[in-house]
Length: 126
Length: 358
Image (cartoon, rainbow over all chains, first blue to last red; front, side):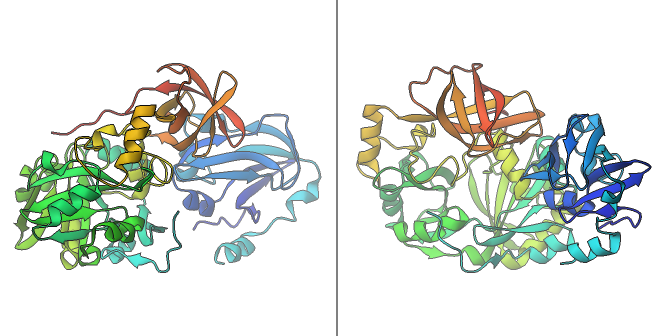
């Protein structure tokens, strides 16, 4: 499984990338592999306030549905509209074109409490 | 109800599946491939457009031999075996006294006094209780080669099998290996199912891959059968569900003097069914799911038994039972409460995807 070193991770298998005051969110390679072919994604709405662990959306495969939880608190400032017609990019590029949304952090320290790549690799290794 | 399964059986092809990168999941007491690395949607399309091969060794095979075999099956199952003859296959049901479908079964009439009865994996023991016979499930693998190009691609390494017609059953030799080939399947496409000795299965499967046939898992098998509106036991058939409710009255040999569940089924036919299996289609990619309530004109009129994304139609499709007397024509609107949230749908004609085959 691909676990990029520069990202942070939640125990619910979301990844987060810090860029200035915002954090881009997606689901991990491990999560997309466990789900199988993604056929539908429910993205959050721009302007939505989210807090850590709160519902951020849903991702559905041919075999199951999985809730996406917010790994940080803040305001949704951008969503990946392309997922509506091409949810399969989550399988093909979970850390790239398969991003879900961008959140403006409520507090800068929110990002630092997430798992680093080594800790997440240990988590998925069981 | 489903009994706990003590042990997981391994298909004779497990090592090959793992070699191909398949993900294995428990199904009916077996560890079976759900998908290979290309994924369920690609495998589904390959079956509709080209050819795929499924390992369906988890299906049971109960063998009945001898002069009494015909009569045993004729009295146990709903369909009329007298409509077919040796060398043909028949879809049939085993009912309980209340006419619930205990299992749906394909019978291969292999030779004059020999029948291979093929229940669903988890129902094999129950079917054997009803009919006796010998469970030969673990002696063979079953490979289903399905799709419009299935016969063409098989012709490059097993030309003998390609002449087996729809619902024909033929014993023959492939490279000196004795196999039984049936023109059956569960995808809505033309195709064949091959019962082959367990030790010869990997060689056949590898030759199929070499001939450009795509390996496909149970994930695609499920989305394919749903598009073809073929019932899955435990969903559209099972406890409390009769063949009539599932629109499968054609599976019943009404003129037969006796079969399990006949009295209850005749009573239901006379009184009228209380609910009927119905198809739904949505405008969204969101998969409708089993368990969702079906709402028409503000009233809950039924529950979905299966639902998913249709790779060919690009939208959600579902099957569910709707109470008799509900005013709901094809094209009429219904709301599906998927995890308590409304998903707009319309009643659809069945099947969602037309059956093909020669």
